[in-house]
Amino acid sequence: MSSNTDILRNKINLETAAYPWSELLRHFAGGTVLVVAKGQDLVEVALHMAQDQTSEIAALLAAGHLAKVSDEQAQSWLAANSQLWTVVVKPWVLVQERN
Image 1 (cartoon, one colour):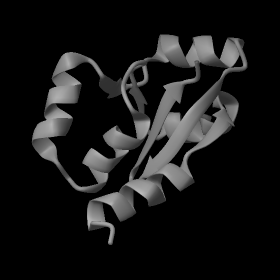
Image 2 (cartoon, one colour):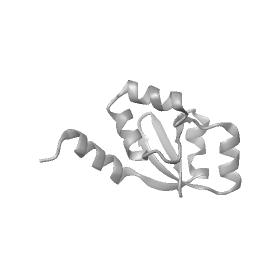
Image 3 (cartoon, one colour):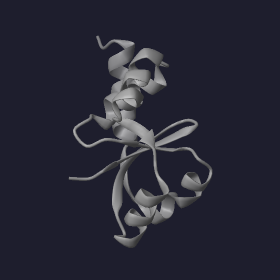
């Protein structure tokens, strides 16, 4: 039998999708988009947030592995018509550049 964490992890994994940055601009304008650094597991970061694991989130923020999207990054993604891996953990939208 799966643990609640495994069930939540699977649910989050099923909710990930690739979206063009242009479709996420209204969320960016609202200040609710966070970028997950390359090399980090998008699903695991989302899991930390969904479980309100503040120490894990604080460590990610301090290390620069999780941050608000900068204006420069937003402009770069828009100019490149970038597709990003995306998952919602209300109120946040987490994005990560695709490899």
